[in-house]
Length: 265
View (cartoon, helix red, strand yellow):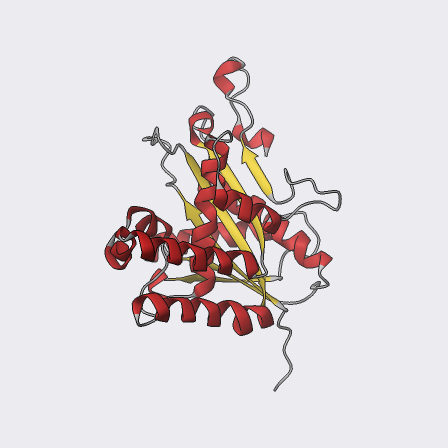
């Protein structure tokens, strides 16, 4: 093999909820962007084979794409979940994969009910990306990846949106004051149809975070399984390390003098 500077990790990014600040879904008024960090060797020797085996066992092929919304609503290929016996085995196996696979999650949650009240708020995707990329960078530094190239894979949202995201990503990286951030990440936008197991796991972890935020009193098995995977400080602190909830307050509660969202990033 020739000389290269490839890092030991790969990052997959997916979302839950939509970015619109004009029409906020009362049932799910948040936007969650989750970054899943995999060590490459574990990814291709464990995660990918387990996902493929799971699909062949339940669908007879690896064609179906694991998508949280379709699974939850039992649509398309997942109409097999209408049967209680299959549904029970399906989730037992899927949960086992999620628990036994090794990955670290960094996530941003934007409460659109509050954020929409700021003057000229940025796109939630931009806010979520900034926090996520910076925290992933810190994690890579802690794992000895300084000066290495780390692929970061976002789910494609279409040509124009992908180009906009790439421009915003490059702008954020280039303008960052964090030493070493520029040059670490190789940006990619990949269609869900590429059927990448890493993107599918990133999709599966995003919504439980939003549901827990909205209904912290409810039992949430998915959140309980996910929590040990979240990035934390050395003393176990989650907020600001593996999860950013933004904003923490609604500006309408403080009067017109507090309406600039950028001040609180």
